[in-house]
Image 1 (cartoon, helix red, strand yellow):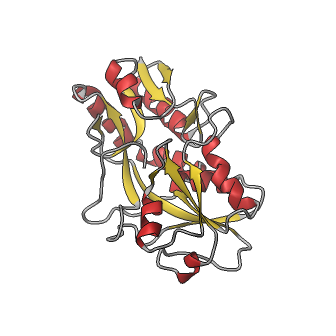
Image 2 (cartoon, one colour):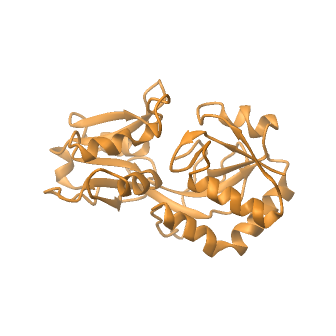
Length: 254
């Protein structure tokens, strides 16, 4: 049995209807391992790892930052970055955090949790003194609604903000499904000397003592690399090249 810990309402990553790309990856793993797939559903909030995989309620967490210290991780199976999401008919196209247009456009960014901790793009904007024209959205959204993190993309579609800076997989997926055509462009610079990194390697995690399971999962990810890439492509997950010395962090989902 392959017991996976996942959020029941967090597309494009996972949901309890098994519609996310991490659901698809878990199905691929289970099939390759000859195992029956079983989920433990838990909202990805503070304490997620303590209450799930590290409480032995499940064994595997897809989509964790590489070298996350709370679990033992595989090698990265993709690398993505934050991205600019804009309406395709936008008069000004933004591709860099140093673009002067960010000082006059209405910019949507996400914050984390109830304590209003900031995400990397919020730090990057603040480091440049871009504050007054920034609109904040909770990264968790209203969990009573489907796809709660998608509200920031809805704001791009309806013109509430001119540009949103969001984690690439989120932007890539919901921009494809938006009410209007949108563009998704990885931010530059991806390693910003004035703030936190904006690109991250992503792995799968198991309990720290479960090296055998980690190695088994790694073997499948390596052997089925093309199938993994096809799943990521199907969900519009933008990937960026791994630099010579990839930046990794300890923490929850980037």
